[in-house]
Image (tube, rainbow, N blue to C red):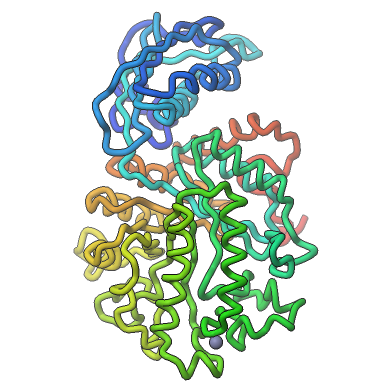
Length: 495
Ligand SMILES: [Zn+2]
């Protein structure tokens, strides 16, 4: 097989496996009763039940499945697998089901339709050997559900993220989750369909991506974008003002009623999501923290510390670890963070707050730029992630839509053995940023050494993968296809 052919085949794989060797020889035909052997150390029953379903769904065939049990050499992170394709046998080896599922995702991306017919008659795989393993344990995507977000769009993006081997999706509902405990903490006319969200949580489990809820416990208490001037609670419930600082942006930490109600809300949300092992408590950009009469006369550091510890303990008792944004733990203007994001202000006077926080809190370090101290430096130094690691925390690096930054943060996380990556999307997970949000971090968190960034090939691969997702969902409406609602934005280009 020549290099051009190899490149054509590897370009369609997101992320490309750590090691893939193509061979010359006969094709493996994905036909009825095609021979497949799966060796695993555990979960044979689950493999026996689920894998034939995937063969039917991906290629419309039922394999002749042979299962073998064998203990395999231990791997650093779950989800590793090996594949051997020859004309007479397709072999998959993995420790457990998650690795077999990852192998199936790679095979679906690699498989190609048979030629020379008008209608699809089947698929084939080229002979090759694959050895694959993730570079880090936590490979997350952060998805926002705004009042404007249809849940089918979240389903589409969850399916694509799972297909690109992300294993966690942090879900931030922006004032649209209808709480049973306190229904007033939601836009009444915009509340989401809880049965549908429940279905997506279960679907994520099937696809190998765990949904993790987020609720902001410090700033962003409005549950609406600050640039919109809206407030999901106070706009219609002025009677709840004492729970917030006077401007409404942060929670009032000295009011014991705030903690009582927030505990109800986060407990309900964690239960609704099926008690996952993590809960994201936000805590970013709490600019006007400690401004009410009571808070401004108290020691703010003590208030914040007590608040975060309380919720850390609440989740520890529920066997979950909290994730929090990093930016209120380091001070803006400190020369150590020049060029990087830090949001705490000197007047907040929070001192070395991080030193007194429990070290099982996961620090989500969001850095959206690409700052080189001098032009001839090869790459940013990312001092904030290194700092939190040295202070004893596990860190997830959080890029956004800057491909150079995402690529570099992936290398950093792998080299420094950080906990992982949490790709943020906010309101930008459509249009030209879509491929940057899926392809680049998928590579960065799985195979960071090989990250191609966004190229014509990777963008075409992402669009094909999204089409496959649409087939899985049975999409039949124009606006639900692709990554844009429409091809021409009539607002900018009236027709
Ligand atoms: Zn207050």
